[in-house]
Image 1 (tube, rainbow, N blue to C red):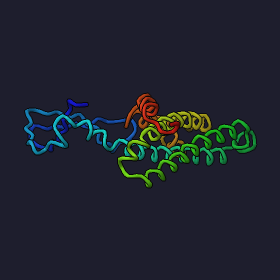
Image 2 (image 1 turned 90 degrees about the vertical axis):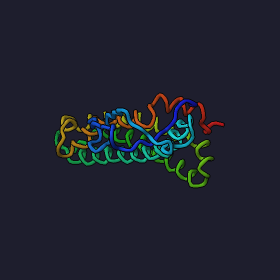
Image 3 (image 1 turned 60 degrees about the vertical axis):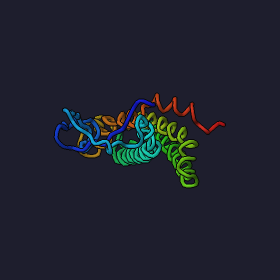
Image 4 (image 1 turned 120 degrees about the horizontal axis):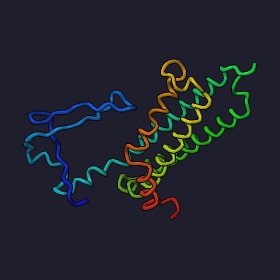
Length: 211
């Protein structure tokens, strides 16, 4: 925590990058960066010397909050697609959604998604009522635990959606494309912004939920 300094290094002589393709986002800026005898002006120091870790951590709450928003939106899209497909797909002379096992799956999926959505709205309201530093202390644990819960439920939702869609879930065209992408990319949020294990540890260390 006290041995990292953060530098702003501009693209120029000695700096080369190579795009690293990822399974989730084709437009992501993930890249392999090579520095070769790069000179950096002292004024490009961000924050104070040996206090770069603070700069790195400063915006994590908002990054994770944004990821929670994105995740909840994605989960609701998955559920919406499942309702559409189950209503259109005819099995044994009636819509797939009439099957009790499908109704159970959809009910379970809705419960998971909406519980996370309600938690996010609660956190968001608290963020609007607190100063930045107060929110950073009091809400970081809740935001971390929500990210953990959301990414776990996202995995379950993707798998359940695949069971509902059947073979269509592995196609990249038509209605199945959203489910295929979810199956391929649910680990994206489970890793970025802090892995699930880190979110659990952070949530238990500084959570204000239970005192």
